[in-house]
Length: 406
Image (cartoon, rainbow, N blue to C red; front, side):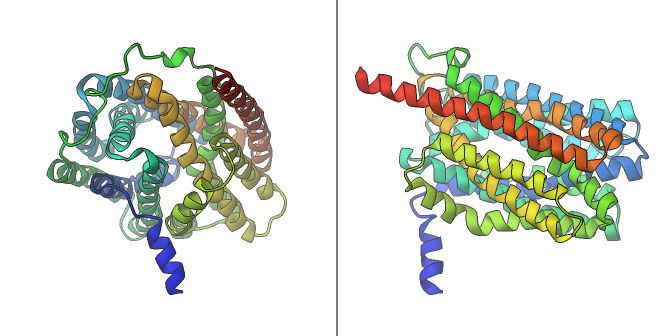
């Protein structure tokens, strides 16, 4: 047991102090995102909106995320990651508190769009800052540490959120989310020195290659959009499936979703360290991650046994544990020849665009054709994404051959 614990601790060695602080800031921020897993339930039960209404609201959520990610990348390349992160966190906190007072369908569409526009300027800036604070050999593990912080927050958030909803009300979720964003801002100002990192506004690539001319990146972009499209069902359509198909309570749903973050917290860092030392390429591991995520939807259609919910959640969890760190590392490597903010912005936009179409499509499909057919469609979509990732593997292999020849 001691050896196991020692090996686990060793996977964290070598990471910079700034990366640890950035992880803690992210943890505090993400712990407050307990609103998101319960948003579809809040909108249908507290505001009495239809699944179709919820789908359109989640599309506005995604549209705000797209605009915010693009704006965050532009601002990061122009004024630096630190200023963007600080401003985004603070204003997001205030806006989340205000969002609870919006009760109409159109008002919530506008409100959630504005909240996500501001909130997601943070993501490209955070990844650029992470790259700047990390040693080259530690970038993938640094990304994994941030993901651990995100998922530790997600594991605690839904459980605490379920308790708040059960014993207080949905309104409390908005207060907690807003307050944690403000606390994360104060911690960032206190512990991170923007001058210590060689941020993107100080490191300029001469004659940078535009992301728009990077063929491999855009094939990758489509694969990530498809992954996001099906993955995001776990934060909108799937909670409704738990409620309507298996009659789980908010607390039970919170515990089931919290299991995702707990498993990631315990296993992701050792798994990533082991995979980094394997013979498999980043592109192949991204492929495996999407395959497991698609499989998680297929198993939901196989039986009515409630235990399949746990199996599906575990398959999705392992899939995202593999896909997210290596997809992020893939983009960081590609960004070395261009503007980092631009690359990280479009990486974020792939998932933000998924928000526009994924939630809306899932909600309308569930309402129109039922959950089982919806899960079959998600499985087919994952196959489409896998075909694009196979093309990505081929393109990258050709690029490597050309480098060897030259």
